[in-house]
Amino acid sequence: MSERHAAIVIGAGQAGLSTSYHLRLRQVDHVVLDAEGRVGDAWRHRWDSLRLFTPAAWNGLPGLPYLAASGYYPTKDEMADYLQSYAARFALPVRGGVTVERLEREGERYLVTAGGRRYEADHVVVATGAHGRPYVPAFAAELDPSIVQLHSSAYRSPRQLPDGPALVIGAGTSGVEIAIEAARAGRRTTLSGQSPSQVPKIARVGNGRLFWWFASRILTIDTPIGRRASQGARSGASPLIHTGVADVVRAGVERVPRTTGVHDGRPAVADGRILEVASVIWCTGFRHDFSWIALPLFDERGELRHDRGVVMTEPGLYFVGLPFLYSLTSALVGGVGRDADHIVTRIAGTTIGHVA
Image (cartoon, rainbow, N blue to C red; front, side):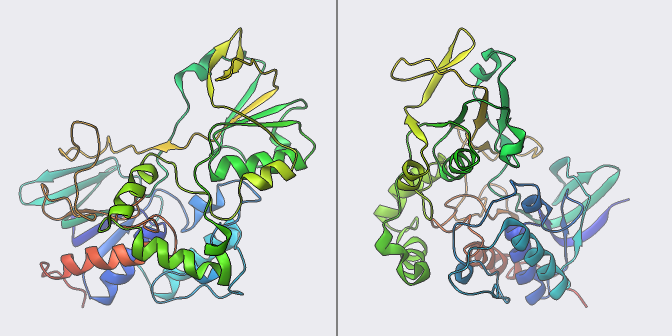
């Protein structure tokens, strides 16, 4: 027996909740399925000191601004609580503890399987976000077993690290912040990798108003500069916004080139040096894992074929919350609402399933 809805949203993070808000606003019958037990738990599971790198003024979802001083940077737990209160405020139909195992077509409708439960719908929005499967290079297995290894998704605080030098691999936002924290905790810390571009300080004046305007209005797939920027963002090289390379230097973190492999059980970097370390924190990002989607969605390069989140080859299937879905802000908390509105406008124009 299947449960039927006009639409199913998979994922109850900021992308899924924004989508649900717009579906509720347009009275479209839907359900939101999420593997976590509580709304916001995906944020609660991240490292202890994490703060958003955009100020509160740009961290609200549709219909509910984030209430804090505009220049305040929320903690990850504060953001989790905000998402939980957001879902409650608008009575969004979230089903927690439901792990989706398969999405496929069955006749004219989509079928979502989760455990022993089946859900059918004409429309499905995949809102599982930018954080998929943690990625570490294959040569990580060659490191000496005495070296403690953590991916950033499992890192919580420097207390997890043994005494001795720490190597942070990956110089994006996560790598920069974790390296600074480890150094301030007294670890001799090295940061490996080429840092992405840094958002200029002038763009962050006025609590980032100029940055947000430029990132959301100019850096889009509709502009030549935006299309160039999208290539870097989709590869994981998003620009550093709040914390940057200068902060790394001030914290006493040593910078080295990217780690290219292992020599005698020790990490080797591009300039030929072999590093003696007690721990390695892999800030090497995530890879999308859509293996549970039994539909031909990807091109020969493995990239999703879509037009601003609309999968043209599979009518009724959509994505929200992916990096640069439309603009640089598409995967940011304050940016997903516009993409969700775009998708739901399309759904509402074709669906006949409404709430009472």
